[in-house]
Amino acid sequence: MTYCVDMILPFDYQTPKTLKEACRLLGEAKGKAKVIAGGTDLVIRLRNEEEKPDLLVDVTCLEELKGIEESDGTLSIGATVTHSEISDSSIVKRYGSVLAKAASQIGSPQIRNLGTIGGNIINASPAADTLPALMVLNAVGRVVSSESEREVPVRQLLESPYKSALKPDELLVRIQFKKLSQDTCCSFHRLARREAMAIARMSLALLFRMRDGNISDFRFSPGAVLPVPDRLEEVETFLEGRSPEEDLLRAAACKVSEAIVKRSGIRPSTSYKAPVIEALFLRAMREAMQQCQSNK
Image 1: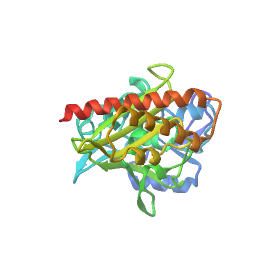
Image 2 (image 1 turned 60 degrees about the horizontal axis):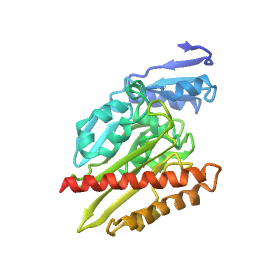
Image 3 (image 1 turned 90 degrees about the vertical axis):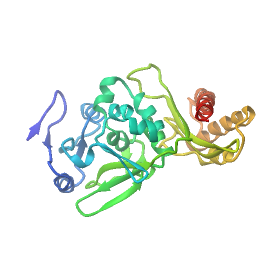
Image 4 (image 1 turned 60 degrees about the vertical axis):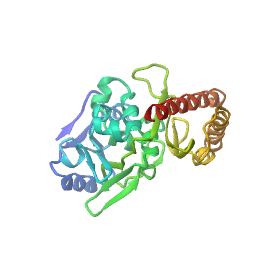
């Protein structure tokens, strides 16, 4: 069937009942189809004519893309699971709390009830709130097409701002990551112009464990300050195996802003963003350290 909603250009709309059918539709469209579930990002882009697909493939009926599952030390989250479902999940809170925290701060309750984790990834916005959390969780996506199936680190699903690395006939089905141990301390923080509805001006996710008074397995990813969300290995290496004294944390905060400038270059907003991301990093580290103390 063909739809034309408000001022959106006409498009065909299909609701496949099986994963195989969805992949077939995407393959036949030869790059002129878009996948829709919550639609919180896509509908806006359609209205702005930033996207002009011939076909929308609605995947909300596909069982393979639903649910949060725990198995063999791994959490698996369907691509159409909403941010509200993630933030409310006792399993995610226990074994991937940094992602639950990130999902709980996305937009408004209405957006969290509609928006999906798969959409947040594939939209590939530099400011996507779940991406820094997924980076530090070493999350992997299960990608399926009519011809093949593959597992791809979430970072490799992002090609450039607002462009995923999926092939036209591929569909992100699930996201999975190893369960965090109970002694893992983590933090997620975001800064926006308003508390609700606003896109993050910057955000960050981090996690680590303490071993004999020293930081271990430290992982850090900032959001909205890099062209494509990523880990900052230079900061991770700097803190690994060291005692989290205040002077060390302040030096690490400076390395955060230096690494961001190195990757993104100096921009008009750099003079504002550099000291703010440093302060946000210190706040997140102090929060995580308090969590470490309470875990003892």
